Amino acid sequence: MRHVIALDVGGTGMKAALVGDGGELLHRARRATGRERGPGAVVEGILDFAAELRAYGAERFGEPAVAAGVAVPGIVDERRGIAVYAANLGWRDVPLRDLLEKRLGSPVALGHDVRTGGLAEGRIGAGKGADRFLFVPLGTGIAGAIGLDGRVEAGAHGFAGEIGHIVVRPGGTSCPCGQRGCLERYASASAVSEAWAAACGDPDADASDCAKAVASGDPNAVRVWQEAVDALADGLVTALTLLDPRTLIIGGGLAEAGETLFTPLREAVRQRVTFQKLPSVVPAALGDTAGCLGAGLLAQDLLETTDPSEVTA
Image (cartoon, rainbow, N blue to C red; front, side):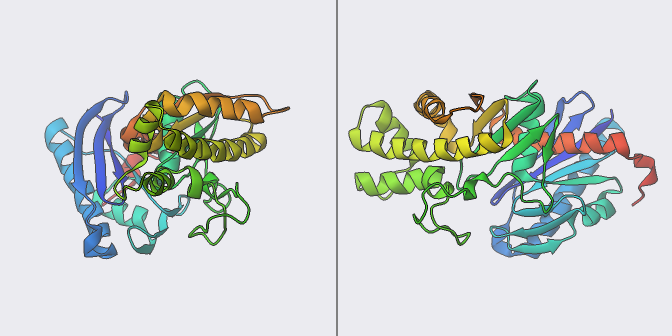
């Protein structure tokens, strides 16, 4: 059975799958990234994991994977196949595509984790059927994927979609990027966790706890939550003014609050638009499988332009 390898590399763990031509998941696996052992060990772990997936596919289905797609965090030069920089993994300028192609003997597509997850949400998830969408996961930080007719725009230098670094509160909280008042300092899951922990006096409280307190009517929680929603709406309206998406897809940990987030967010966005067309604001559909599914799509896309028989180990 013809299949591809899909691999999503995160800060602490890797999710992988073998994906058939029809998009069916034939095999799933997970493994720790091993970042505590250093960037070299992380890279070797990725190569070993991919090789094991290839061997499993060959044994189980009678032939090895014909291509692989790999999603990684940080700055990614997708055209050259280089993992340029990832703070949480410690690597710089890793020619990951070339290393994987040599190990696997098949073509490999390298993608940015958020853009790859956005590709999956746009094609087979919450944005299916939308010609223009913006995927925004709200996690430790905030990133974005700009969807255009079935593909995701990387930008001239691989930085497209960094909505988390739109300044929504000029002169506000310092951001590690060097600016002050960035969106992710106010509306990410980690920002809400920090604000709620300070407001309730419990250093272990997080965004999920804040959402539960909002649902129960706690006024302090409602204040913290609304401040985050207002900042998020400001950033999203800036983005939709520039991009005019048909659908806004919101994912990540904060989106797990469901309508506790989406009801006030839709209203906040609606109040801010003037001449702009109001897009649909919907929750992501694929959860933490989006990156892996998107990596599979990258690999399948690669087969449309590459003859796997031309690639040798």
